[in-house]
Structure formats: structure tokens, C-alpha cells
Image (cartoon, rainbow, N blue to C red; front, side):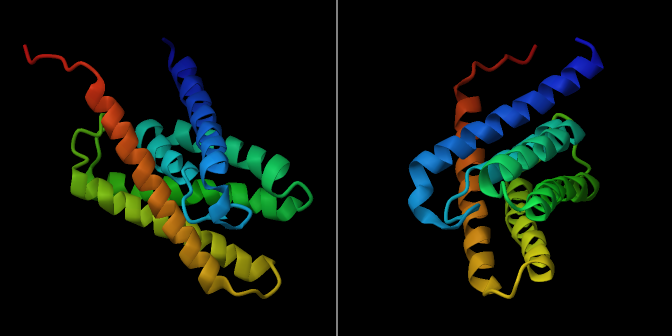
Length: 182
């Protein structure tokens, strides 16, 4: 498979799984929504971290595309600036965590040296970075509102959603047959 085609498939996989998790999130956890996009459990946050860890830059491109799609057409169709900036922030945070983890841990593309402890640090970092960047944007762009409560709910939702998605993915991977060492 050509490199371009592989990268394209990674972008499409990111878009597909993000939308899938958003639909599941809306179906199962819509009762826990504080405001549009801020939930006590937010499964797409897990896709943000996994796609950047697994696909690197292609995952970030997929995240940017899908974040703009859901921001412009679902969450904020009448607020161009919020949709535009929200898509960028939703991408920069997990990709930034990935880049820091890559540098700090010397992550291999296979993620073989991503220990459970390091993964947990990445989960926590991503669960704090995204709400922090979003709320910096809210503080600058939006009219004054109570930011602490929405920050705490977003951080908790991102953490809960990321833990659920990452550990569900781990369980699914454990079901796959393992290759024997030669």
C-alpha cells in the first residue's frame, strides 16, 4: 500500500471512529451534557488521544477535519468563530500531548514502549490539555460566564471518556489471536 493511501486511510479511520463515538456518546450519555460539547462522559476524547498515538500527523489531520465537521454542522452551526477555533483547539491539544510524549518517552511508531503508566499520564495530560485550551479560548472569545464549572466537567468528561475508549480498545486487542515468537 502506498504511503499516501495509508495516510488517507488513517485520516478516514479517525473521522469514522470519532463520529461513531460521538453518536454513541449522544445516545448513551446525552443526559450528562452541561452545554453542547461538554459532558460528564465524552467518548470522542478517547478517539482524539488514540488517533494521535496510533496515527500521528494523519490522526491529527483526521481530527481537524472531523472536529470542524461536527462543530460547523452539529454543535455550533451559527457561530463560525467558535466552530473554527473549537476544531483547531480540539486537534492541537491531543496532538500536542502526543508530540510531548513522543519526545519525553521516545515513543516508537509501534508504541511498544508505551507502558501502562505512560499511557495513563498521556490520558490525564490530554484530559487536562483540551479543556484548558478550550477554556482559554472561551475566556478570550465568549462573554463572561462561569468557567470553572465547565472546565471541571469537561476535564472529568474527557478523562472518563478517554479511559472508557482506551480500555475498551485494549480489551478488543486482547481478543485478537497473538502471534507466537519464532
